[in-house]
Each structure stands twice: as structure tokens, then as C-alpha cells.
Length: 108
Length: 117
Image 1: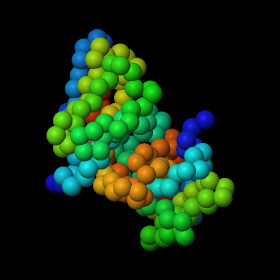
Image 2: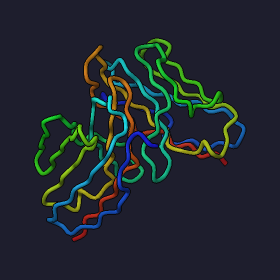
Image 3: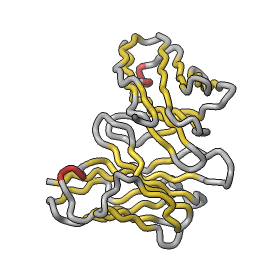
């Protein structure tokens, strides 16, 4: 079983739509959670950390549910430039596991 | 530019040859990670260093793979007797690790794309 699992998508949404991704993690000892964005043939870039109380950064909201061992990412008012693969990451104090990524296509 | 840098960006080699990649982390970061990524998959953990000590290696890392970080700064990843299955993007990342504290996020380099023919 993979440490972190995500729906690979693709999610095809129109501009302005709200889209949500979920991700589950198997290691209950995981303490660090992040969302990364990866454009085609580029390196992953940190989108946001995920805190226990949930956190928001502009159009992006991340939530953590420890009881059910999942994290989520909500993107509001999608832009064409949001098209990318979104990677969910769960980790312990010193080791990080990545999901396979969820592909988002935002269409005009 | 004070980000993570990797060299070379691309490497094409013939099966059976040895290759070596270099990573220069963000200077104040004490942890350095190597990941491998193939098409349609997320980055897969290979190994990590805290300063010069290699603290963990993935079971997926065969004996043909070796990594070093001799002075706790840059790191090298060597693959001996390359195989076609080694073709992938090799990503290096660094972070600031503090004992008993939640890990700070990884900052990735541009990666080295390896093609084994």
C-alpha cells in the first residue's frame, strides 16, 4: 500500500470553477503535510503547508483530518494558470512521501 | 540565485555506463534528499542526509546506487552499470531540519533527467 494516495484525475474544469482534491495517508505517525504544484517536466514547487487547524492562502484552502487520515486542497475561482499537477505530501519529522499527483486542467 | 542547483540538467548514457549527478543545496539547509520521478508518478524517496551523515536509504535503492555528502554541503549521486529502468528524473531537495520539530518543507532543484539507451 502506498504511503500517500491521490486520485490521478484529470480534473477538467472551466475558469472560475471551484475544485477540490483529496489525499489519504497511511502512516498515522505522519506530522508534516504539504501541497506541491508541478508543471510539466519541471520540479515540484511548494504551494502550501497544511496545518491542523486548516489554512488559507488567497484562493487556496488546505485542510487536515487526522481522524480519517486525509488532507484536502480547495481551489476557488480557478485560473488557466492553475493547470498543473498537484502533489500531496505526508511526512514524519525527517521523511516525506509524495502522492502520484492529481492533474488539473482549467479550460477557458 | 540561492536555490537548490543540480548538474547536469540532462544526461544521456548507454546501458552499462556509470553516471554521477551533483546537487548543491540551499546553503543554510542541513538536510539533503534525493528522489526519483518517472512519468505519471510522484517523486519516490531514495535517500537523505543530515549534514554529512546518510541517515536513510530506500529499500528500492539497489547496490548500484550510491550517494555521498562529504562535507555536509553538496552531494553526489552515482549510478553504476546503468540500466534502461534507471531512466527517470532525479530530483534533489533540501530543507532545514530541527530536532524534534515538525519538518520544514522541501525545496527542489530543477532535476537531472537521465536517459539510458
